[in-house]
Image 1 (tube, rainbow, N blue to C red):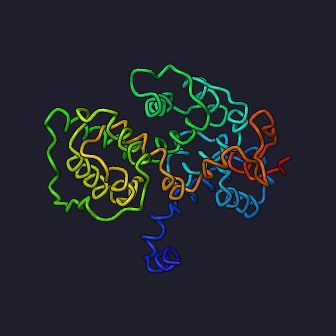
Image 2: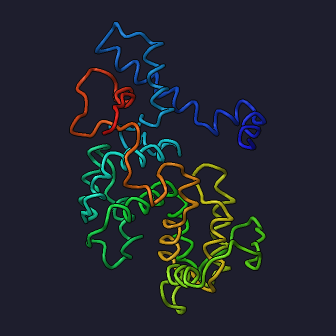
Image 3: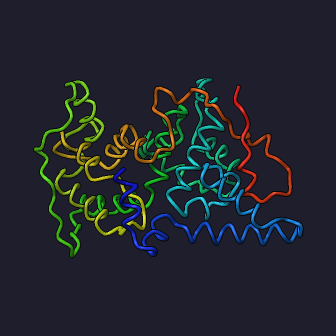
Length: 307
């Protein structure tokens, strides 16, 4: 309910910006005008109704260009979910694919999706030295969710991390109170703590940077983002590094991708225990893409019953 009350406390300008209303209005009208050239008898009200239904349902990114998919957090989360729904049979079959093969699958849904972003996803799983190795679908899926949704934050954090490693990092002008790591956290077993430590530290206490400096850099990015790009919540980042003294960049990303809180926040994928399960409704697979004259965004409205 707090989110609902926060929504009504926003000014008109804040509401339009927070929910990217103008982005969808502009795109919907552009799609309508493009479609009217091919079909002058189109009913604008019905067309826009279909368009916004597809946005609400999360099917609006299917077969759209990358520049549109990456415009809003809702678009990104929707595309991640579309990818999962279309290709989860790969996970059920236990197939292992390379980064290039995963990119080929993604390009069936978004033809101009950049290879670099898929390669960055592979580095989360395989680290920098083994990006050509094969990956399971669940491993790739949750790493892809993290890399794609938090892309801008991760890029800036990598720059800060490299500066920390080289000793050239300079905190910004804004003074940030770095929260203490001594507050209580949810109880974890010793084995779970050891696993988390290994992942964040990169299995070596000599690797990485001081955790307080890393946390300060992450908070600086979050503080200065001004909601222009998505960042993990502070409490989640703090939870990930609460048990370690030093942290590596890729160790942190691995832990972030595995954290159940990321799923809850992004709300695009199910729990890992249910990632292979069927849902009540299935999206059309790429091979079944309709050849109608409806616009790209409206084509995604149609869904069909799953087996």
